[in-house]
Amino acid sequence: MNAPDQPYTVVIGLETHVQLLTNTKLFCRCSTQFGSNPNTQTCPVCIGLPGSLPVMNREAFQLSLRTAVALNCTIPEFTKWDRKNYYYPDLPKGYQISQFDLPMSQDGWLEIFDPSDRFAAKRVGIIRAHLEEDAGKSMHDEAAGKEDSRIDLNRTGTPLLEIVTEPDLRSALEAKAYLTELKLLLTYLKVSDCNMQEGSLRVDANVNLHIETDDGLVATPIVEVKNMNSFRAVERALNYESERQFDIWQETGQRLGEVPKQTRGWDEHQQITRPQRSKEESSDYRYFPEPDLVPVVVKPESVEEVRSQLGELPAALRQRLQTTYDLKPYDADVLVNQGGALIDYYETVAVHCEDGRLASSWMQQDVMRMLNEREIDIADFSLSAESLGELLIAIRSGELDRSRAGEVFQKMLSDNWSVSEAMADLGIEKVDSAATTDLCRELLAAHPAIVTDVKSGKTKAVGRLIGEAKKRNPNINPGEFRDTCLELISQMNGED
Ligand SMILES: [Zn+2]
Image 1 (spheres, rainbow, N blue to C red):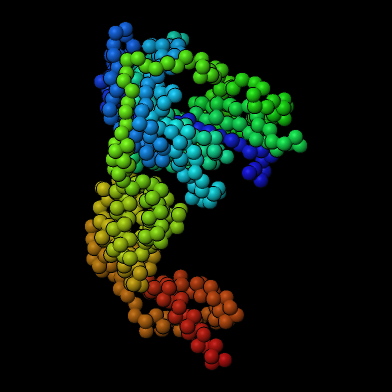
Image 2: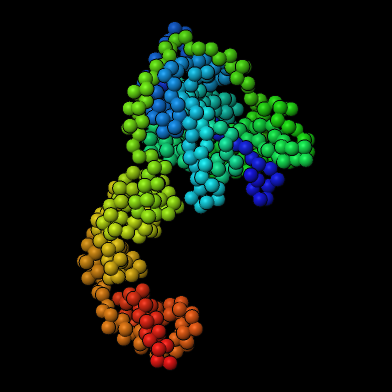
């Protein structure tokens, strides 16, 4: 399906490298702490000295298993390790321990959706998720005035889970939605801190175009795009790359298979992709089974145990919030994105005031804004969920309107007061219906034009009186005032 303004379909598959939250590396006991002095977290195993022997980190495997099960993958009973051979300055062993033909999981899916409905919800296929060790880091020309390159091996051997999707994504927007959902899932699973700046989440994209021509459907050569350091960069790089590929196709007519696969890097500064070293085919890596590690046997009972301990994951939680509290998908999504403790707070408020939508609106417009302003978590928020619930009950009963409720909220927050204490301090008391009716009569008599408008069907005209009504009596309830005015006008109709 082409976007309306595009003469082609973009086809995208993503490879995500997720650094797992373990204290130690995948095959040795070195620390995985980020930001230490270069080469202080190494040992004979992770720098590959002869005679050293790797031992698998069980925790890393468990975290991978959690993730794979949550991604609806099949978990084979038998999985093994392979050496992926290549020479790179930051890979002193000359090979990386990875998984080739028997990965620890395969054939899963992750559902993505757009809260703003720009594309339909869909399942993105996961080809496989496998464990591997990270390489070190090369630093070029980083010190001012120096032209040397340096290697930091602290990262060497850090556990990574590589998650590879089917080429199911059809736009940069869908790619971004996939990454957003994946990151949220990983956060809920507590398997990674997903910090892109520190390299805990790295994304490569394979992208090409399908173009409808007079000779049928044509596919352009696949390009792998690297070096995207934020989701925004992914979206921009993919948009740029699709346009670039379309231009190249118009110029050369090159099709898939006619040129070798190209690797390009995203240049954040110039907002373009540039060619990088050519991509190796997997036969170039000369994979062979790692002789120093035993294969891993995963019993079906262990998989079931992991499944039973996953907890409520984002998709299910979103669904439950929509059903239980009558929330719109967008609002449920906003809350789910905030995670754990904030959801608990919200649910307490919603149950207390018996109005899920009102509670959601207050969470988003007032509570979350306040948390952002004060840069605190919900755990440090001074107003209890029950007190906020009381405030919302006062709104529902008509005791308070939105703007006065805002003042009460501020008072409750700053002075740690209850709703009634804050209302008393602000001099708020409910205006009885006789007083409201008197005020309506008075203002309608002073504004005959508004009465005429309402009679001709423009009921909204009453709204023009609310400001003046509030000036006369700040405690007036706008909803009640409006209804009373309309009622009075309809009675005047009868008198005509
Ligand atoms: Zn080590």
